[in-house]
Image (cartoon, rainbow, N blue to C red; front, side, top):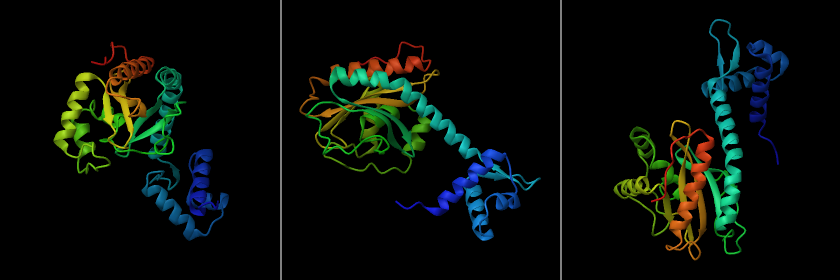
Length: 261
């Protein structure tokens, strides 16, 4: 597959700045000879996106604040994946469901780790969700488990202007319905998706908290409706909540944790 040359050039410029600390336009041009107009456009684009910044006094370029944010986000995701994976594996083996570890990214839920069910009944050919594939907040247990425990301000910002797209007959499509569902999740301590995103697939999710009690991720179990019956859901919820609480404790959450009602 062919590489995108402009992106390759931008990355090499970022690598130069990482190695040298700060460089002027002329210094970059000497280290990485490019047409002057091309280099200027790349630097202008990187600066406008806050990937680099130009010191007004020296005129030199250095790495920008957005790269720090990205680095912090990457480190935190690597850390939570490492901590959560043993819990995910045990939970998957105990209930024979696919387990997802999910965070919010750009207004959607994003699975950052997955432990696949070994069940022959799990419809891999139908279910297209997985690591790195975003999904809607309102139609997934993982998304609702995070939404329910946001501060009122964060919740309003996240939902502002959102259209609640319909995916199945069970999808929540109005704000009053969603707010009612979130209130129920806060009461029980876990969220359920009754085939709201995909037909045939049910999900149960619980929040994961940091040392301050803030919910920053969720743990979810996914299974086919024929196995994840209404009668079995409370038992699944109990185990998902216990696993999520175990992960939260390793992040410093010292309270007794949310219990499935």
